[in-house]
Length: 335
Image (tube, rainbow, N blue to C red; front, side, top):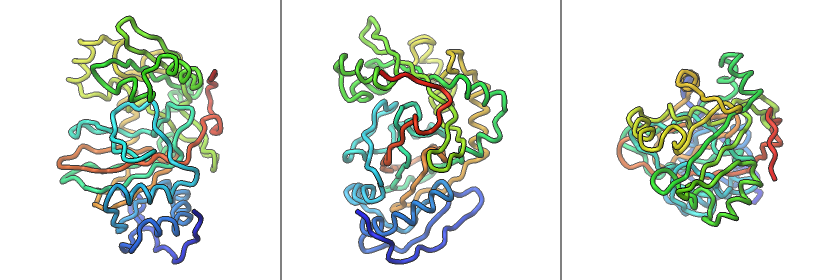
């Protein structure tokens, strides 16, 4: 639906340490408001990397789904290769990942291990937690600029590797990740998406895939730190959880971890450095019920803080982008 903006949006509120905030009065029709202001919101995101819309007054999942459809230029994505369970509200609209509330979800770019990933992330808060739970954002180019040159050069040359082990006891199931349990269909998906795989004797599935850690934004051409090296690494896990998983499954059987593209382990010191770099560049604003947030998934990483109390944040992954269109530094061969 293409509707030009009927009224000029107010200026974006820019404050240090906070994402850009756009204050608006609750419209009579949030869906129409989104349609009328899509171009203006896109321009704000293009300039700043993200924007939090406050005052829109989103009330329920049905209204949020309709708003997401208005803001998507080329459609909503069905998630594949998920690492944590989600509730599905509608095609391409999900709950936040089911991750322990007491544990942070550190900065990452959504589905950055896939050959196709969302160009834009949409978040809508229907119920704000009592404390914490903010969705932080961090500029990926700013993070890249301050990382050690030798580390960046190695990761540009080698890329990064995501290693996953699917079983029936922990993490997402094979069906949740691939949308099927059919071995032939899973094999076809892996071949088409440059994923190496093997079936284990216990019926579990092990996969590994090599991707670029640094890419260029397909619109601006800016170099961006774009990966989930820190978030999906074993050293990001709570120490007690990490110890339990190692004792139970062994170092090679962890539900997920990341490596350098050549297969070498990524040490705890590197993960700590990446996490601290993100923290130094994080902008945050506590959620309020009814808020809407748009995040350029390439330019900006996002996170989730620990929280207490009920928290309902819906997620839409929209406007798919192909890795091949982002000047990847590592070639992958999809069958």
